[in-house]
Length: 600
Image (cartoon, rainbow, N blue to C red; front, side, top):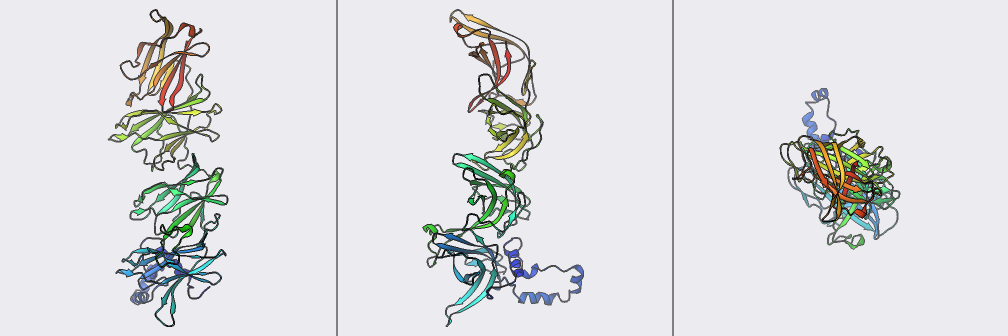
């Protein structure tokens, strides 16, 4: 190891603790272990002298009397132009006045004893205000394809006006496993964590903590996309902005680059928790095994820089320098919803992730979940009916959550919400919103899981904010129909045909005697489902239809009412004739029907 930059690991750690990990910046001497109360009393008389001595002896990480330095990151990566060496250094001005950043050379030393001088980025800070932290980026491209291993980095003062020219090494840092060798797509950072383990990001001046909270895969028209959710916590005393970094996905020997879905800066108040999300496009059949957290620095060449041409000729835009910081092993199956599945009883509030911003001051309750195959359809239909209750004292927007039913075998079925819903929910009132699901006949309905999805926060991707076991209801065989918020008892009914002499056609007339009960404080408007009657002959042909509404001047009420279908030509039907009675929900994909009863 070259003696001119060699220093103790302890000194490196002291400098890193001050500058890299964030928090209150203190002189390195102040980071020494505090004495016990007894030691403090015994050494009180000697304290002034000790303090004076510490002030006269700069810490080893001092670049100047007031400016301290630490290595944030270093990398070696193969490019079409050769090996790209990059180092980012963090500086801290511990003085009380503005300090000029000294114009020293930054050099790296390789394990085989070679030195390379790196060029400074043209946008590096020229001065630091008191207590300010700044980052300096250095880079150089070596026209070589040989393997390279970095052993150290040093600041060198060059006096070109002296004869002969003199060089003085002012400060050096050893480099080891923290160097990122990104030439291979299979490179992994030294730090590797288990799924769900809380971490801070090495090399960043931030107190924020992160915990992997969710990983799902969505199929898009451009291929599969892994959507990762990180829980961000601020244990500090002041507001912090989430720094720029990204999450990549490793699958086999390939690495797929991700991007944060939040377009604006995310700020986290002291003691607050927030989610941030990353989308990682992948190839078909890729099997993710780990996440890699990457930070990026930018090198801008100057007019006199030897690295004025970046890889690919994109000098004007600068060179993006990626550094792998840590890796996270993915959970079994590479899937983990941020909302864990809970047991559930129909009619009870659904536990929604408290950090979700989509559902605010609104209680969501699943009142009904039916699955059946309707006559004449080659698939099953499931209909879930939710009640949304405004628990605040002011109107709130109706939450536009999405839904998904997951079968016992893992197949997921997307839900479709009714076409129209109320725009706002008034305080103390409940509103009914229905979702329908098209399901193959092979789905038994055992072990269903219902998920509420947020399609806005990480748009265009969906994040689970609630997940419950979904108990299916059995259809009643008696004469009581349950269409929340109504319980409708059919006390009597008659069916028959009418012949219109003027039109020479038949119509079907149903006389229904109903006893209807409605739950209190539940709003039923024109968006609510309707009763739908289909006249069917013995061959299963639909001969005529009629609707019954729960709103308007002709709405269904308790008592006897007559419902007449449209005209039926006599030659079109064969006896016996029955009437199928449905609940119908209008959706963007058409009508979703639930068979309630067959009248004959």
